[in-house]
Length: 427
Image 1: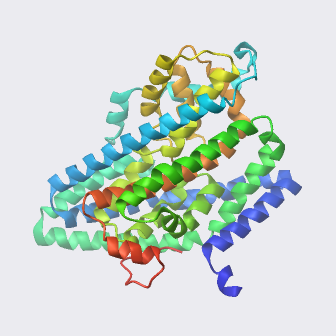
Image 2: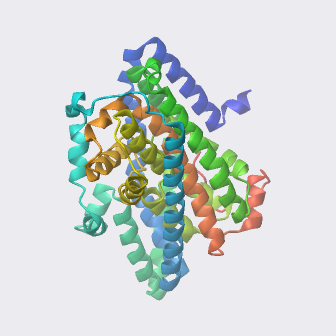
Image 3: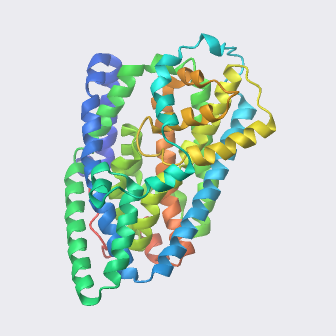
């Protein structure tokens, strides 16, 4: 019993159970715990920039070939777009088949758009493709780390890694220094992860306390449809990808079980990024692949968010009796391929992406976002978990595709066999 209590996933489950009880029995106390959950996520996020920078820069420097980096990045982007398209198609198909918004007969003119005005304004301010690409380039080296923009940090790390690889012996010394600093950052992650049960529990207490179980009933059909679709996508699509990569999806899910529970409780995939990077490297994925593919996937590979956005758009159309032709839905898919990027990190970002999508389709009422306000947190739990699993599978799959996966080691680790440690996994 004592040994079981030392396991992080057991502690997180206990924390979440206590949080749910507190949210039900004392809702005001549950709501008051939101700063605790936010504080845990912020503690992890403050470490993301140096860890991503160190991992990518060291990995690229050790790879030593810019052409290899370009090949790896291209493979990752191809994979991301294929899986995102499949996820969007799955969401659209299920929403059209089960029709979760049918029969609500809501007049969009009666909805109070002021409640979602902030999301719509943010979505309009995000700009187009050119602004997105220019946003990858930071105003200064320091601003990328201060702002915590993942793609900007990756860009600087890529350039640093290439430079270090070309500097010979002095570059090797700097690479060793960056590697040691990154190891120290992972040690700090290990300290922060001790607070994971508290963070996950506080997150659940806030969710239940603020929105209540009763909130789920009016839109229960949509919630059920999203969770079932997410489960089928993970089992069927990601299961097939994992099999092609040569590993068992079930075993991989067991392996990252701690991270799945933490993400479900906090609604933030960023809360486990450093720990997940260490786990995948320990699994046998080459460091450059982990450092490049996993953080980039948080922006470009948003399977769960894609499913959610597709279903939410069709749900709002059905609820407000807005007819959507096949052509309209293909246009929606094209728009979602752009608006879904960069919305995987924290709770609420998916809502901004949904506002951007509705704004791009004049026939759809942006005020329809109001219908989802009360249950967005519950929906976000599903999409965050799928995003996490999708990016884990993506990293392994791209590594196998690129010949950068030690398959024998991966299978041994997933079977629970003792293998020599490659890195220290925060726990």
